[in-house]
Length: 151
Image (cartoon, rainbow, N blue to C red; front, side, top):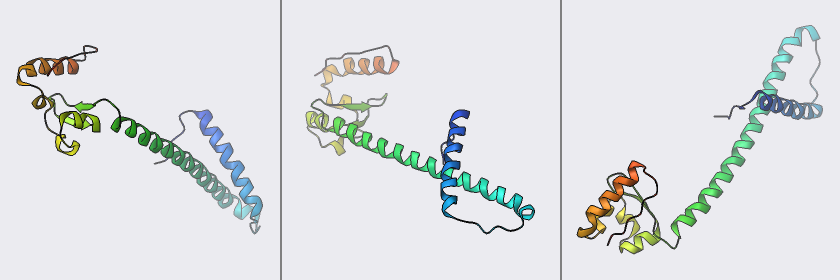
């Protein structure tokens, strides 16, 4: 779905740009000229459709550029996450592991694909589990930065 301009100025600028590109195209193409009165409305309609087509082409090019930038950034940050020298775990409120990086999986001694959906507290010593569970509750309560030491 094409991105709609956020502001009237952007829409006007896009239209001016589209009309300029269309004029450039039209200078290379010559239409057969018939009766001006009979062709006035169809020619105007044709012009509007062509302008709209160019607007969509410009928007499509902008969206493709944005997509390419987004994909490059995703790849960069995925590499940073996966190959970080510290373990990262994304967990839900029950402590189920939703994502883990390679270092985190290595720290637990389990293949990364095998720890997804398992509960992180199962990897914590039984004596530290109440402390860890209280930590998770504080984290998900959103009471600021939290620290927990567990074995």
